[in-house]
Image (tube, rainbow, N blue to C red; front, side, top):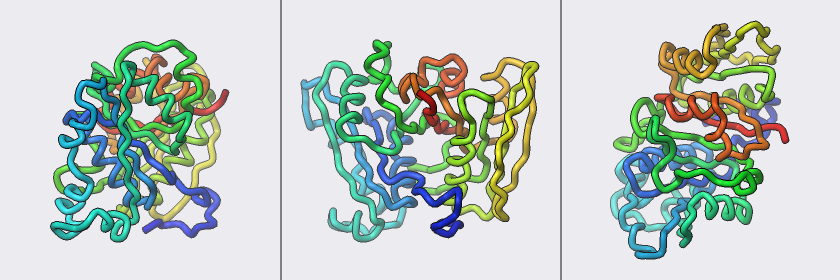
Length: 291
């Protein structure tokens, strides 16, 4: 249950009300699926499973993705053999599947989000190789500029905060990199909101600034009894210092802002954000800000 009253200044708005999970039915995308499903349950919001098919076997691959009901039964939230209606009746999640035939997966995803916006996209990464295979490839700027939506990048290996095997949800340590630009305040806000919905008694929040000659930005920190804040100052290569801090703190989640003009997939093109998303051993929540 949320730790804050509905009129709290930091949590008066819903964390998210709709989630889209991108899947190519690979093991990395199933890990992202587990995170999307658990978040949808905790937040009681809509969940869309999105897949792009090249057209050879349209509809066939859906049989390879674990049924939502099957996973919820495995996790113990539904009884065995529950009807489809039980997903909404028991856990208040409305699920739909979207399969699109297209040669260019990124373009298809961008077009879908333009027609049917969501609050959060969840997709898998495969370490240094980047996003899941069918989403790789460079695109013209015009294809990504208008897809400005928060995105949770979930690594194939390493530390996630949701277990596909048993549904365990562990969000104890959150790291928030800050600098003057892009505006770090949305990262603080959404890091706080993630803690609001954590089941942990205490969530440790670390604000990290890598300053090579510049002072850390002044940001307001929400003080709550279930939050423990620390500020860390480092010098050196920005991306590597953030990754090292996350590893040292054993972070469950990194929350950071990225320039909104690049769109959510444009985050993959930025040098610092790109390195963090591709190399972090925990999920990364990228929040586009600015124009």
